Figure 1 (tube, rainbow, N blue to C red):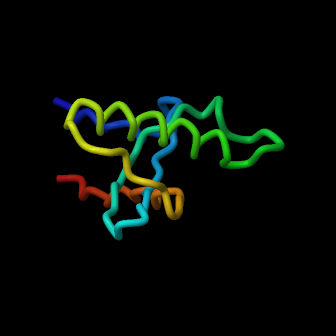
Figure 2: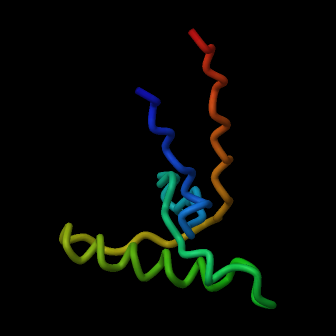
Length: 85
């Protein structure tokens, strides 16, 4: 039976971002729809979406939302080659 390979997030219509907040904490692999990328605004719509996500998370957790210091795209995971047996 063939092994099912997992598709990468970019192939499903999402890009992953790493977020560093002003307090020094970090959030990895925040999912952002690809439709927000590629315009003249660059990654600014991503910053707005992640700020909205952070506000929702903070509200549910009962704390103040954290301010975003920097955003960067998460590195794309390279699948390891499998040996045929």
